[in-house]
Length: 446
Image 1 (cartoon, rainbow, N blue to C red):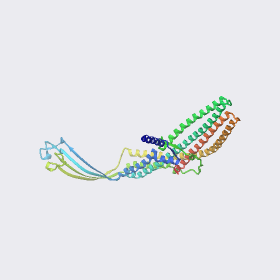
Image 2: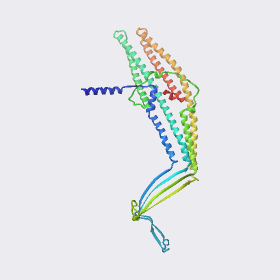
Image 3: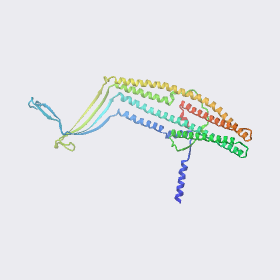
Image 4: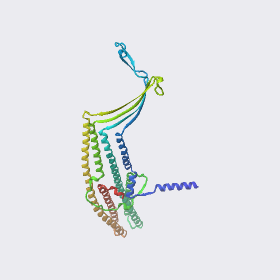
């Protein structure tokens, strides 16, 4: 019995925990996304990876040391035909001479060091810019995550507000239905009135189911953009949707926008790429050195000495390698010109991006102004429609208004409430775009 009670308790605890609702402010939602969304994590991994890329480029300027070894067995030795006079014999006769040994083994160490290579020097300079590029890209990714989460956060709120309006209206309609049913049962109301209210309640129930489905889909989208498990239950506090007019100042400096800074860093990288291609015109100079030990004989050289006719010897070499490009079939020139075209292309992207960012700011300002006017009008309209609905309901109960008037008042109230919520959503979305255009999306974390 104790085991059954314990099992029941644990099952209840797990179920309760699974149904626990997580209340999320906008700040909490964004913070969660920045810590858990794959896009944000991958951007940080790219920053980490840039350090390894820098180390890879730096390695080209450091000494390269390698150890090598080999063992060869020659079952059939190659013969070379020489003039017999070579060995003091008859010069008119040829002599077949075998060179080499059946077994040979060698081991050694080699070193190479770049002394001058313009492409290596350019790569070292570009490495720092590459790291800065990924850092800015990480910032841009965070801003994109913030924007997506904020947009979906407010859309979830609006859908829930629509659901709340329908719930409230459904309760009121059911109350009216019960009143009419009571009147009908007492012969004081027509069946058609009861049927009309029943249809109205059914329609509201259908609308509610549609909005409920929209809420679920929007919540799933929000949780996806946050990197949150889809099964998590969430709740958004009402205070998160307050309207606080933005201060509209002069247009922000586009050069400080993350999108623009990222393109500028990309432009720097393309300039380095052009210089790296131009390095193909420069000579290269490197130092090489090696030390080797070789053993040869009729038996496997390992662990054998001169007693078995195996002889060991060492040799070494040190040299300078100079390479001067004279003619490459115009390959280098073509690569340089391609890099130059890419550089000119990104300059056009910078001009277009600046125009786009300025446009976004102006559009956001206009949307903010229009939304504020719409919100004021829709708020007054919503309050008025609620007052009309309340008065019409009282008049209907007292027999001073028809059922048609009551149903019309309910429809007008639902429409006014939805229009008001949509107006606030339009304002909030425009507010996000305005904050984004000023490069201040991270202020949503404050």
